[in-house]
Amino acid sequence: MSLPPRLADIVAEFAEVRPAERLQLLLELAEELPDLPERYADASTTMEQVHECQSPLFLAVEVDDADDRVRLYFSAPPEAPTTRGFAAILHTGLDGESADAVLAVPDDFYTALGLAEVVSPLRLRGLAAMLARIKHRVRAAKHPDPAPSSPRAGASGTVGHTTSS
Image (tube, rainbow, N blue to C red; front, side, top):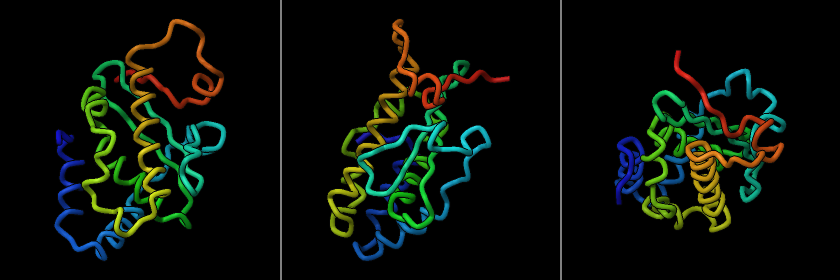
């Protein structure tokens, strides 16, 4: 499986511990999810909700026009540590990677985390949905549709293009 280096490190870290310790590792990662920048402070109006997640999760994806790097932003409530942990895995593993590297991540990479033994399939579906949304937004940023975008995608900032200064 070809993964960006930081995501590969996370997968390896999960593989090295027993199933019971995987949940603890996920909860520790949840505490590392960074705060949102001010422009995404009101997540429900500025970010895209991932409805497949059992807890409210919002995400925003930006692709820098200058260097094709992906920036990821997640909002999940502190009382949803599993969801926050999934978001932290994706943020730590993919934020700052090239668009091509993000798009090359296998859709089922999360199976290598070994969380199916400690987390419900519904929760894992949320993680898969987060990755699918990220990849969809990266593709949209790399190959913009000439037709006007939906108000949610354009006005909300979920697909952003940034320029390096």
